[in-house]
Image 1: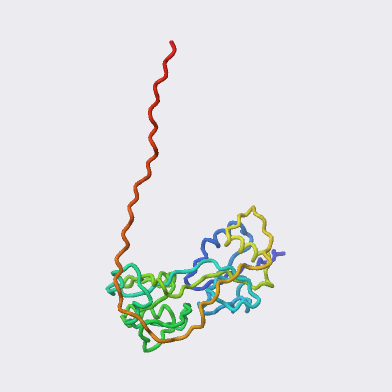
Image 2: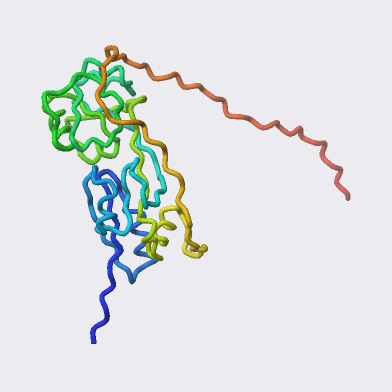
Length: 255
């Protein structure tokens, strides 16, 4: 008789998230349980979990948290993607007001929680962030997106700069609370840095999720022309020197 097939542990993740380091640790600790990576759309929310497509997921927050356990992991910097010849390429960072005279693309899968979109509205909304970046290369407009997505769709003819006051995107580890299996608990421990020899007691509740940035909507576009920012002068520090010990009188040698 053949041995029963072990069901894989299914990990869903949105574009821009790289679970490789956690998958590597899983394979080391759980060699008998294969892990299956399930790519999902950036705007899918918790549907892959609720529809039992995945056991746990790395998703962008905020989410409707009914029945979910959520551990916020990190917050990404938002950047503006522009052609390399663009004026923004000459500065270290920009602000939302600097985008006032730019055509800002707003893809349908945008993950940033804008209260008011900056800049001029494009003629149409690109279907995806990848499409929007192609439009940037064609000099149709610029795009503000999480840095990981700018890296994911990197092109040699484009560059990006941080937008210091743009909405940020937070990534969290999410699962259905009523489906907190031993495998789910094991993966949670891996992500949280729990060692293989540490206690694996289940948590009865998840850490609180960050509050939402508000309802997405378009409002008035206000701002100023781009300003070049000179890099802040570096403060030179002298390396601290320790007090020199005064040489003591040499002791007399005994004959």
